Image (cartoon, rainbow, N blue to C red; front, side, top):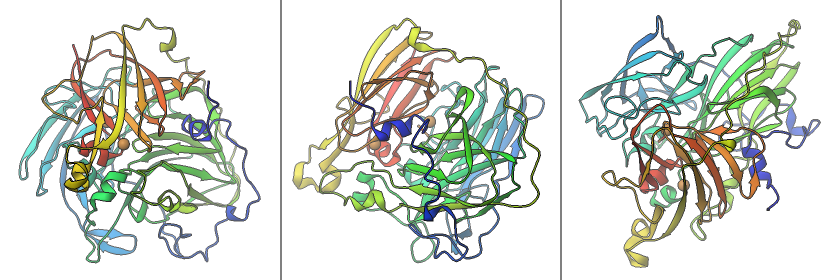
Length: 493
Ligand code: C2O
Ligand code: CU
Ligand code: CU
């Protein structure tokens, strides 16, 4: 058995990770810090955090229109022309409850095809529900319709385009928004914050910059880090207040290793997985696509939400090791806690113990090998032909079904990464329970819909294929890799 690496400890949610480095000079954010670019400390006068508009279901139903089109707004202090849902970045937040019906008209005002995916939601992948095989052409619209199971896990989810070949580019350009499935019994907090982290790069004219083939192979990371579309916004609270922070990593390829020193963090859960009781966390690691549901109990003073370096590996000779360290110490937001102390918050009620698939009967075992390697074009075929991104030796084909599972059964999948870079593995519709992480058994129930498979490592998960049948996909959530072919089709029958 290999000892648990720091990387994997972090991926389990930072539980029990090294204590706080309180007292370090970097703890307190100075208002005099320099620019808001990668590695910078933030602008001199931070703007207050904005929240995306919210659309809430009523009487078991929500109907809305999402119009994907070119927007005009300020990003990082410059006029920019990103892609937006309904003219904003992020798009509106959708608030639902278990059992709800959701109807979304997607209108495509882009100059290329798009479609819509509800990331992490346990809903049907068929027909006009969460069907990523749908194509909505420019100028056309499509009416999606979904129904959540009455017992849908509460938590943070998100939506984004999923048209194969253009996914990374459209999300990088600004097409994403949050979905919240409300708790049946609300948790008492003074504020609930929806925090979507994204990165992008603007060209000289304020358009979203194109990327090189090299950047696609590595997975593009933007120069501009945004929280709800803002550079280093300010969050304020009073001492003793307890806030709920729902954080989504919408970045195409960037891993977010987050710290908020000087504050007490309790993790309610990640993705759709909720712990029976909140867990103390010193830092968090969110792979692309992951979410964290966090309680922050405010302590007086000025703190910063920082992104620390994370080494996700790389292709030898294709990118410098400096890449991973670029974001070291980048400030995502500042948190100012001042004023009169608030009354202590009510205790968080314990949740029933989640189902544990470790004791389930396993109907089938499969191995999925994520690999990168030389393509048929060989060295002479240019960079694109040179590198292939495959699962079990094959690139994605919409018409081929790669895995067939029986509805109602539990399967065990071993995800093997033979490449020198991490791949965050994502399965639609059916959540995964982590069983073994690089040789180390996972000793509690940890549910994820994005599981990091470390470079040259392996992870074992179990999946209950219940409630829904139909065709859907699994893929690397470094979305450039997905667009390059690291995706497979599963059919549940
Ligand atoms: Cu977040 Cu298949 O996607
Ligand atoms: Cu998804
Ligand atoms: Cu990948």
